[in-house]
Image: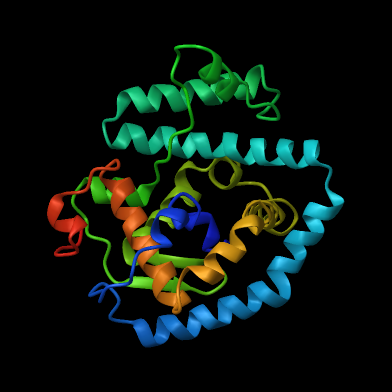
Amino acid sequence: MISYRYFLLPSVFVLAACSSVENRQDPLETMNRAVFEFNEKFDYYVFEPVAKGYKFITPDPLEMVIGNVFSNAGDVVNTANSVLQFKFADAAASATRVVINTTFGMGGIVDLASDISRVSDINISKRNEDFGQTLGFYGVGPGPYLVIPFWGPSSVRDAFGVMVDSSLFHPFWSIYPDFDFLTVRLPTAVGWSIDTRAQMLDIDKTLEEASLDKYEFVRDAYLQRRRSLVHDGNPPKEEQNGENGE
């Protein structure tokens, strides 16, 4: 399971003071609310305790190493989707990150690329591109909002994008297709999910206090963040006013 907190972290503090508006992108609200409640219970009784246990028993340096390795793999996805969107400068930056961190960073254990970006004029900071954004770049709308069991907020477009990224671009699941699913690929996915959830533990209280209707808050935050990502932080005016989809 990938907690919705993963998607909301960059925008949760900005949106905490925003009121929810009627959202025409959620025609499946009744079903989505039921799945949302299921995910909340699963997170409360299973996922959050596991993440807390992982954080408790894992030394901070090892936790950082694990996060770096997963982040390095994600840069492969960023590179591929930047190329598809003709963002060649971003593609070069992400590819450079992969080369530096995989070689000198010992397979991504050390995030040397971020250190270089911080102390020099070379901008190879972390990018964020995925196939859902690529589809949006080519004018594909998000479609209905979806809450996916064991996953969280999504849309028809973004759910398809995740499948494409996983099957074609992500090195853990696409470059080595002969890896056994039960012994290698599934444990890797579960490990990534737990590590991601552990990183989000500190924002739980903010989410709980953000809105009287947590479902609406999560939905609106997710949709607004995805619009912003598709348009590189500068969505058209009509989208900012909620008049149109992407």
